[in-house]
Picture 1: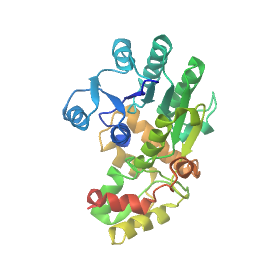
Picture 2: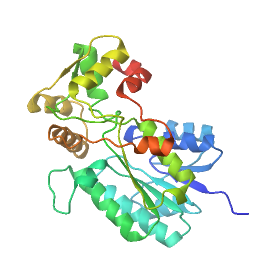
Picture 3: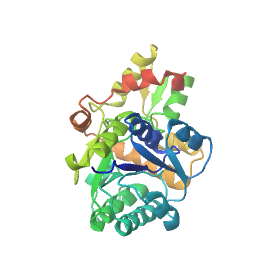
Picture 4: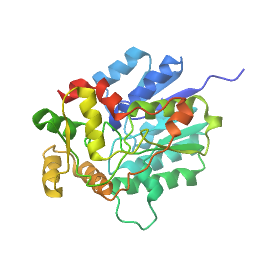
Length: 303
């Protein structure tokens, strides 16, 4: 009888909309043996242990830490916060997978923007370029892989911190998208897709899944869904680039992260996010969550 699979989930301390902790919870709920890799052993790590996960602390750019985390693992979700070290971490993971052997699937967290990029395109953020390169490193490594490419997440500061502040203070959803349309997706839907892939790798190996919300929306249509969810008027406004960039800078994010989010806003204005797929429904069996339903679940964020 074959040994049951063992799972490694990186970035399990949070980051990237809390995606990895959600995957850990889903796998543990299925009775899986889960190892959660965190950057720091803190209260978040304790919460993972309380759920039943094995927790290991380490640095994804450190081969010693990565080899220790991947030892004995058969299925892996690779996820990491927005960082200039992303490509280095990807390379270390692929080297470890090659040398350790035994990995049935590496589920890689990427971005939908990658599908529109070329080797020489320059319109994208530095981090989007790292994702483009990371996918190629994984493919060249020969490690069995599945790439997950969500569009912008509803947990992104565009729809989260920045949106919440403007809604609370002015009743306005301030998005610098011009006439661009977008189809944001909830992290919970992405986590459901990742979990489905990890539980049944043979059904998905070699696939690229592009995950969006159920429909593309204008700024005004997004604001209407916030309004319906919060039971009060929310008006969509389109600030000038300079005004919005000042608001973004006030959050005090690291330069690499700030440049990434600012670029996402510009690409929205250029209508690069005007895309919708049914991949969430095809893989999970249910439609992707609407903006309205997401905001209803997180009303406390918006006052």
